[in-house]
Image (cartoon, rainbow, N blue to C red; front, side, top):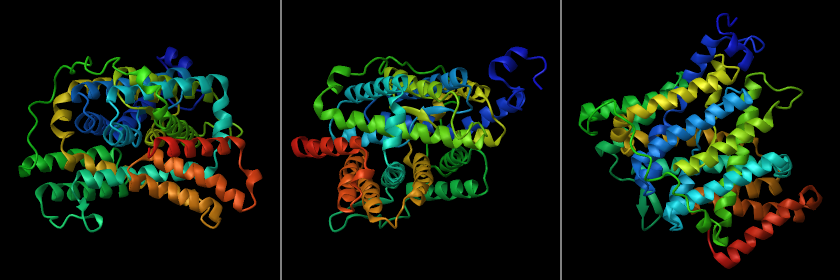
Length: 442
C-alpha cells in the first residue's frame, strides 16, 4: 500500500493501519485548512488585544503548533494536530492580562508552569486519577462555558454587543455600520459553508469576508502576500516564571492546567474513537500523546504564546482518511510554510469583522457540550449551569470554574450524595473559597 516508501510505512505503520502516504498527506492538509484560522485569531488576541508583539506572536503560534503537532505524529503516531487553544488564549488576554492587570510575561510564566505540571502529571500517571475524579457534568460545563465566553468576545469585538448604562450590555442600535455588516456577512457565509460541510469552512469564511471587505473598501488591501517571517525576539524566552509563582496566580495556573488537561483528554478520545484507534475502550500510547501535548505547551510559552492543546478539528483529517502520525506531520509542515504568508495575516487578523465570526462559530461548537449534562438532577445541573453562566458574565473562565467547583460538593452534601464526591473535589472547593476570601475576585 505504501510501495516505494518503506521507511514511512515502517515508522507510521501505514499498511497496518489500512492507509497510504497519499491519503495521509491529503488528510493532514485537510486538518490544517480547518484550523488555520488560529494563525489569524491568536495574534489578534495576544498581540493586538494583549499587548504583545503581533509579528512575534504569529511566529510563535505557527512554530508552537508545528512543534506540538510534529511531536504528536512522531511520538504517539496519532493523526491529531495541536495549536494554541481557543478559550485559553481569550482567558490569557481578557481575564489575566487585561482584567487582572498581570503583565503578559508573567502570564506566559503561568502557562509555562502549567505545562510543567501537566508533564509531571503525565509522567507519574496522576493525570488519570484527576481526570476520573472530576465529574463528567463539570467537564462538559467548563467546555460549554468557554464556548459562550468566546462567542461573547466575538460579538463584543465586532461591536454587535455594546455597553449600556441601563442594561449593562445591549444590541448595538446602529447595526448598519459597514464593519458590523461585514461581520454579519462573514458569519452567515461561514455558517452556510459549515452546514454544507465544506472542509476548512471557518478559514474559507474568513478569506471570503476579507475579499469582500477589500472590494467594498472596508478593509485595506494587503501590502503583499509573501515575506520572511517576523522576528521572534520580542516574545522568545520572555516568560516571567518567578512572578507567576505568586500565590495570587494559583487560580490562573490551575485554570490553564485544568482546561488543557480535559480539553486534551476529550479531543484524544473523541478523534481516536472516530478513527477506530481505541482498543478495548482504551487509547494505546495515551501517555505519549499527553506527553506531546505538555511539551507543546512548555515550548509554546517559551516561544511566546498561550497554552497549546489538541484540536478537535483534527476530526476533519480523520474523516478524510487520516489514521497515523503522518497526517499530523503533514499538518505541521503546513504550519511552517504558513510562516511566509505574514503580510496576509498582518492585514486581515487585526480586522474584527474578519476574526469575530470565527470566534462566534467556535463558541457554537463548544456549547454542544451542554447536551451531556444531567439537567434533571439539580445537584448536577445547578453547579454546571452557574459554571457556564459565570464565565461570560464575569468575563473570566477561572471564576466560572471556581464557582462550579465550590457549589458541586455543597450540592451533593445537601442531596445526601456526599460519598459520591471524591476528596480531591472537597480540597479544591476549600482552596477556591480561600482564594475568594483572601484575594478577591479571580
